[in-house]
Image (cartoon, rainbow, N blue to C red):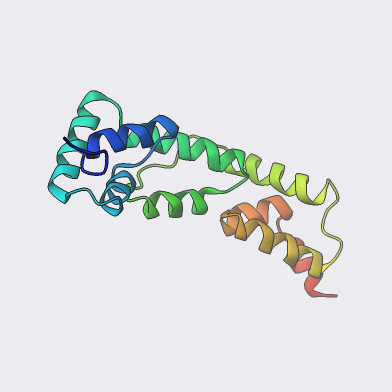
Length: 150
């Protein structure tokens, strides 16, 4: 009799019933659960062939989640690399509009009052994973130079 611990397919199906997983992430979980590496590889191949595990679907889910959480393209790329997914072309997302919405939600519609406020907003957006160019566009091109005279 095989227990769930020794049956990677059953354990993987239970995990996939809760949420999507990338192939490497799912494989790592199965190995940590004590499944044999050869059995894990076979189970992952079978699950992918049956359509239960799909890296493309995982990328779509992760992209939707990170955008909804207000993260930018750099954070998304980092999360995909961490999950072992080859990073291809950026998804069709208007990152400028996303950054503006995140900034507006956090700081309101007012422009930065001074250099310190500008820097604080820029750090916030950078921490969210937006590019420097996007941050400059959101905060107003040239505004950092305006504050340099202060």
